[in-house]
Each structure stands twice: as C-alpha cells, then as structure tokens.
Length: 300
View 1 (cartoon, rainbow, N blue to C red):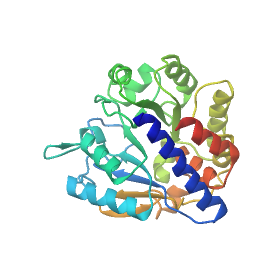
View 2 (view 1 turned 180 degrees about the vertical axis):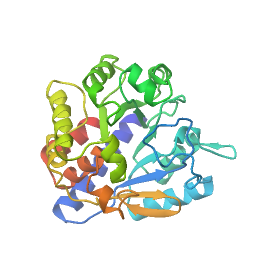
View 3 (view 1 turned 90 degrees about the vertical axis):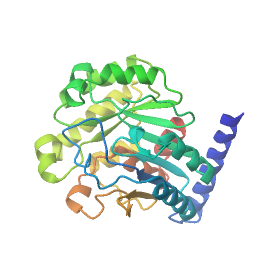
View 4 (view 1 turned 120 degrees about the vertical axis):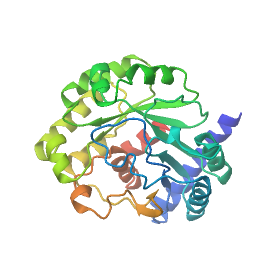
C-alpha cells in the first residue's frame, strides 16, 4: 500500500510539473543534487573531488539544505559524494537523511554510490558505478566487482548500474554492458562520458568524432535490446552536442554553495563537452520530446 501511494504521488507530481513546464512555460525547479561528503573509500583515477575535505556536511547543514531545496520547489533528490553510504554525522547515518528527506516531502530519492556498502535503504533508487567487465572494473575501482554484485543481490531497493566511460574501459564497453545485463540484477544501465577539464579529457576521454563514435556504439547496444537508459532524443542531443545547458531545473549543493546544473557551470571549457547523460535526458524531457518522456516514465 505504501509503495502504491508513493507511485501515485510520483505520477501526480509529474503531472503537475508537466502542466507548469509545457502549458504555463515556467522553469520550475525539480531535481536537487546534494553532495553530502567527499570522503571515499576508493581511489578512481578520474575523480578529482574525493577526500579533499571541502564538501563534508554535518546533519544540521543537511537538514537545512533539504528543507530549503523543497521550499524552493524541488521534488526529486539525488544524494551523492564522495561515497554517501559512508557518511556519518555523530550517530546519524545516510539512512536518517533519507528518512528526513521523505518527511520534508521528496518523492523520488536516489543514492549515487560505489556499491561497496550494503544497499539497505528501502524505497530509494541506488545508482551503482560499474566500470567494466570484472577485470577492467577491478583495475579501475580497487578490486570491488564481486563485492558490489554481492551487495546488489541483497539490495532492499531498485538498482541501476552506471558506467563512466573513458579510454580505460571504452574498448571493453560492449562486453561490460552485456555482462552486467546477463546478471539480471540491474533494472537499467546508464552511463557518463568522462567529464573533466580539457587536459584530462584529451588524455582519457572523448572529443569530436571519437565522442560521436562511442555514442553510436552505445545507441547500437540500446537498439539490440540492452537495458541502457537513453532516449533517442538524448542520444541525438549528445551526439550533436546542441542541447541547452545549464539545465535550470537542476540545482546542486556542494561546499555551502548552490550551483545551477552542476559544479562546472562556471567553466565553459568543461560544460561545452559535458558527458552527463542524465542531464541531457532531463533537458530533452523539459523540451517535451516524446522519447525522453517515455524513458523517464519507464525507468522511474
């Protein structure tokens, strides 16, 4: 009954958002991203924000940020880090944060995690990073592949896999996605193209025609039936790199500052080569693209 009530509330929220966005043409806030910490138990080469000590929040700051975000109009929440599942504030854990977010009124709550801690929060969506087949993932992410799958098997909530694509795993991408799909543990597979400053992207990521080719490969897997979270509209927008950004309906709170869309909003060199597929997907939903709206409803 509780799950049915949450589902009804979610769809009523989508309906209200659609009316304001498409009929009344208002840029209503919707998705709030809370960077709750930057502490992490892994050391992935492409991450520049881990263990800097800049973003760790105490519970008072977390409660304030969530309440203010809801009052501003946000109804969907993503909690990220660092590694949010290791966050602590005295005796308070991430589980308490999720409970408070529900009390405030957030309908859709996702936790972006490396999956190395038990996924034991009911009623959320866990987005778990899986960066390749077992061997490739283990080389990038500290031999955690089997540990993560064990935690996913016992998860108390929906789990989506997320791949950060770089030169370290691009050659292995098709095998990785097929391997993850064959486990039948994930309700979808999403991806990001490595997004960083231009020097890092030129060494480890994709630009120009190379970027288009890897997007074509991803779309080819989608057409073959792999459970990739990507609409036709978002694929085309990413490939043409012509989607509107920043996405003003997204806000991210980190280090005491509220950012529109993401922390790189003030850095055009990063923004213009953005590879965050979820941001592109949301931008296409806001344009009313049918395939993007269908993808949203299918995966939430």
